[in-house]
Every structure is written in structure tokens, then in C-alpha cells.
Image (tube, rainbow, N blue to C red):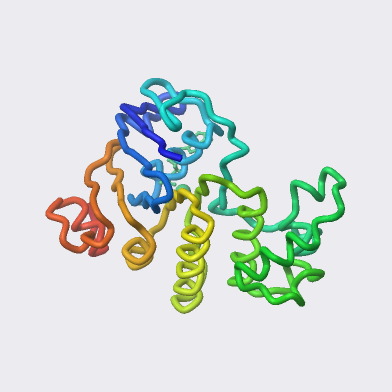
Length: 232
Ligand SMILES: Nc1ncnc2c1ncn2[C@@H]1O[C@H](COP(=O)(O)OP(=O)(O)OP(=O)(O)O)[C@@H](O)[C@H]1O
Ligand SMILES: [Mg+2]
């Protein structure tokens, strides 16, 4: 799905978070949203996901204002699994809560796709590692066969080796399933590895944008400072 955001404004009371955001999310590509903490990255993707309304501007989904959000899936920033449910029940959550019980085959297939050992099927989240939990959360996000997946900091909290594994997995899965991906990350290495196009938010606008493979070559001063970890 192609998503076009034009002159988007979003405020919470007097807090103008998104001042004038324009960007295009291309079909079956991986778009990366960058920017410092609190700049509005999560608000932006939640607004695109229709979890928030906006004040002005427009968002077009394949050229239309209307969209069926069943086509969307999100890996939330603090998207923990439900502690009291088994991994299989977490992955099949939407069917599980609706008492549809014959989801085992689909869950095993997804577990295989995200590299989760079969033995995790009946375990509880407290019994598996952080990296495995991320895999389970990814499987849950994939369960409804989304056309667009929003990933809010999918590798935060993982060590570099596990981050790399999750990044590779995300690339593999979105290519194989032809999914449009929109990811937020603080990790420049992940952005370069997993992204096609990046957008950098600063002071409520897109301050810089370009090809992820050229992130380190950007001439934008503010973005360069962000990339090198400096204060701006
Ligand atoms: N539901 C809400 N109600 C009111 N204000 C909110 C709400 N959600 C976010 N905000 C405000 O919007 C601003 C941007 O928040 P957001 O979570 O999008 O930042 P972020 O770029 O994702 O930061 P981080 O990298 O730390 O996750 C913050 O000032 C925050 O307080
Ligand atoms: Mg956030």
C-alpha cells in the first residue's frame, strides 16, 4: 500500500508535536522514521494507523482517505506480550480472544518463519529470552497477514547480535510476504541495513530525507549531528 502524508499537523492541547509533515511511504518498501526522543515518531505512525486523529493536512491510502485498518499491524514500542498467555496464544491473540481454537497450524508456521523453536509454543513469556519475545511479538504482528506493518523500535533492548538477527529477520519477512514496512529506530546501523528510504523529523517537520544507503553521506547539518550522536 502506498501512503501519502501531506502537511500533517497534530497537537495535544497546546503541544504542537507534528507541525507540517509530508512524506510518502512506498508500496512494499521499508521506510524508516528517525529523530530524537520526543520528536513525534510514535505519534506520527499512530496517526497514520488511525489510532489518533489529526488537526489538519491529509493522509491518503492508495489515493483514498478511507482505509480498512485490518490491513495494518503494529509492533508497539512497549509492546510486551501478555504474561498470562502462552506464546501460541499471544501470537494468535485475535483468534484466541474470539474463542477460535484451531490456530495451531498457523502459529507453528509463523513460529518457523520468525525462527522460534517449536518448544516455545506452550511456554509463557517469562520462560523465554528477550530476543525470543521480540520474535513472538513479530509473529503476532504478522498473524493477520498485514499489508502494512509498523515497527516501533523493534530492536530496542536487545544486544547488538540479537538486534542484527531481528533486523535480518524483518527484512526477510517483509520481502517474502511483500509487506510495506514503516519502522522507527534509534539505531543508525539498523536503518542503513533494513531501510530503503529514511525521513528525519526535527521540530515537527521533515528536516532531511533520502536513501538509507546514503545516510552517512547526508549534507544536512542537523541530521549529521544526530547520526554522529551529538547534541542539537
Ligand atoms: N496520548 C498522548 N497525549 C498527549 N501527549 C502525547 C501523547 N502521546 C504522545 N504525546 C506527546 O507527543 C510528543 C511526541 O511523543 P512521541 O511518543 O511520538 O515521541 P517519540 O519521537 O516516539 O519519542 P521516543 O523516541 O522517546 O519514543 C511528546 O511530547 C509526548 O509527550
Ligand atoms: Mg516513540
